[in-house]
Length: 150
Image 1 (cartoon, rainbow, N blue to C red):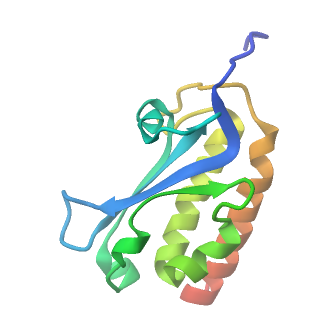
Image 2: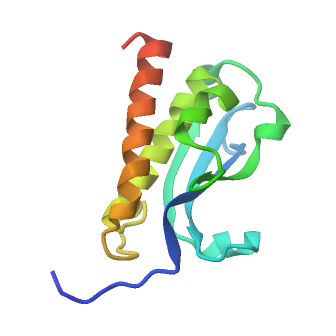
């Protein structure tokens, strides 16, 4: 390990959640992707070069209903007035919400360690990501118990 600092143009604890139809899967299957958000983010094209922190494929059987088009696409998560872990169940429902929280938890954990989903170093460890990671984990645990009885 070196003492060299890895500067990053990405915010800690704030993410871009993107939900889309999984074109490689069956109709209704989804892909959930979480990216780091660049500081001063204004252009959606900035996400194209941002570190991917998590990606999950979700079969329609796992969440059991059609996802309204209004819930597809991109949204900010964490920081300020953006979507928070505690809001995910209300917005997406229990089963799909649990999968989204899992992706957000994995993203925040990787952000905390300064790694992307491929384990490449993208910056120094960021303690600022810990509160979001902890909230996503706790909300996921409560939702899993509620939805799956575990």
